[in-house]
Length: 601
Image 1 (cartoon, rainbow, N blue to C red):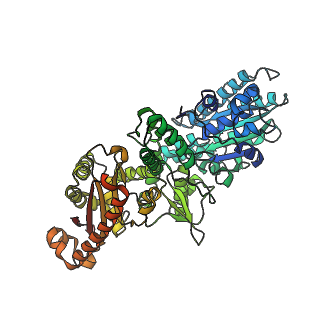
Image 2: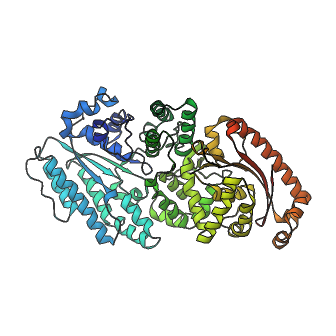
Image 3: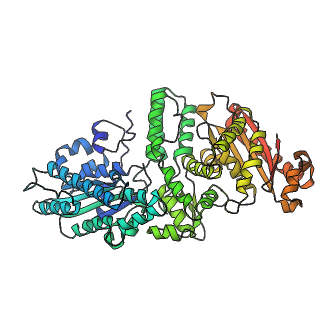
């Protein structure tokens, strides 16, 4: 099999005999949905391939290749009358540089539009009555000239706009103050981007543009365009389109089965690979009525291609091409109240809960109303680092981190903010490796007591219970290269009999493909006792030995309870994983944010 990892050209996918998961049955639905449409999904989720699908289906210049491209697909068996009946113009705003001042960005936008129009003139010269002559510097004028020639033919224009918000978002996130000012210059008043979309809106009023389909990531720019482009209908959360981009588990399992046959993998190894895929790449739910979860298609193809090539899972499960998503998390962390919101999201006991998903919100909402969790959670949802988990009996929306790839982005950001110094990072690494390779918790507990608690003892990061302590440990222990870390929700999705695990327990399970190394598994159960309950000050508890603290009745009782629960969870893990588990089990009691008392079972 040929996996189209990184390929967003439908023509190349079909003529090159790559794997294609058919979504062409939605073309007829899109036709019926409206003339000017917008569709939002996270980065690298297959939006560009969908636009390329529309381009190849509607392009009048490809009428002779319709059967080759679509004959065996859903739309080929029942085509709509509009196929191969349009001129196609495609803009890709991800190609526009966000560097420099407004004048430089504006000229880059004009240059891009002009280049696409020049290519349009060359492609369709046999259908046009006169040569198309773009304006040398004004892309809007060139667009008007193109429309004038289109109106002289029996055909109309289908405009495809990819990543409409890409360079505007890059401008916004480039610098907290300067970026926001440049962003406003692009979109507010008679800003350049607003002018472009006003031209698109006007072109749809009998001026030659019949249809437009726009993709993007978030609705921020769309909202700030305001009256500049208020005619687009948003398909993003409608039930018919929730899986327009992305894979169902059955589709992933079928592809994995074929790879398994090629590599002669045992059924057990195929099951392990699917569990790994599910834990790291599945978990997205787009829309209030969506039931099935969706896999990230780019990451899934990355995994399957590597698995087929090496007959083992890729060592790195986060594709480096998604690294720029870290910038979006960093941007949110830098907003007012942003960092504690990100930290709270890692706490499974307090999932983000809002009354409604904001579908139109501008940059002012993000910058000035961030205290209202609605905007923050909505933005994280559109970025693909939160997803909808359920709707409560009260009608509120509950969100969660979709998978371990997304969780890694949160953990890395929180770790960077809490431990910015290189020396602290080196000490941390030595402490966590003692757990990884020897099941020795002492260095990590010492590190947390002396360095990490000092940072956590701050009102912005503080939730005084077991879950805060768990977050401290997991922020340090998280390593997706070797482990499936924590993640109680992810484990539940992978193994039905793991649902008994409490949110107060953390697990560090070696990835199936990494068991060939001397890595150790770990299970940690947490308890928390406020200093006020102990009747001790922070100074007093720091001056008392760990043995003396453990002998105090309240601490001894908490340690005994944690030990009992840890033993129960250990039995559950051993039932799931069997003899391959190299499990070290710990009961940990935090005394305020000052000391740790722990016991190895």
